[in-house]
Image 1 (cartoon, helix red, strand yellow):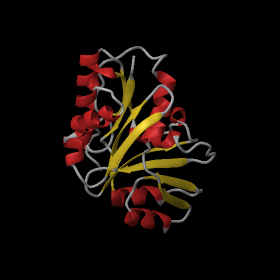
Image 2: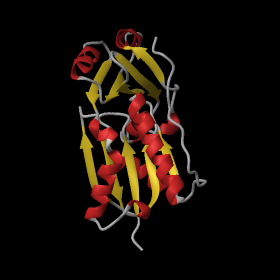
Image 3: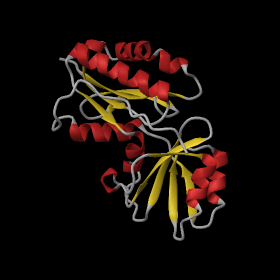
Image 4: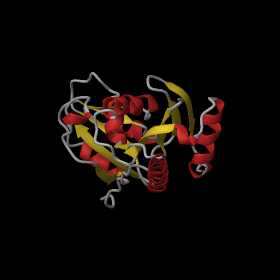
Length: 217
């Protein structure tokens, strides 16, 4: 019997999805700056699955980024994942976008911040003591970009900023004392790694909720 797993990120650009077997990603597609990709995600998944002689009914598990990030994208991703999980009676696992980026940074020994773009001129971030989602030092925090830069100015020791931030904001971060900032996008391979770790040991869930934050300050 043919089966596949669906990996879905509509929270952070580039938006993406992948079809995976038990041990590897078979197909991956990503798109930036085009919200029709998000709106037509089911059609795109159906088209890709046909290439491997699969259908949506062959999906036996879903790993989805359920936020934070784009409000609309997260809502559509979660709705899509939940609906497919209910129809196929398969598990769905939700992953925090900031945690997934942090997990991809191993090994890192210093304090670092994973940051993602939020609404216009806003940043959502969390602080970690090492590259592992278990070593969080803060909850997800939303700030205006100016307030985020002011926050960074308080540090009196080296700290790294990593995430899919704009080149303009990264440059502003790198102008600060003690701060090193670099671009890092969310990769579906990292979602797949987390998915494989938990899919067979986790309690079977067929419903996840989107992660929305309070207004930025």
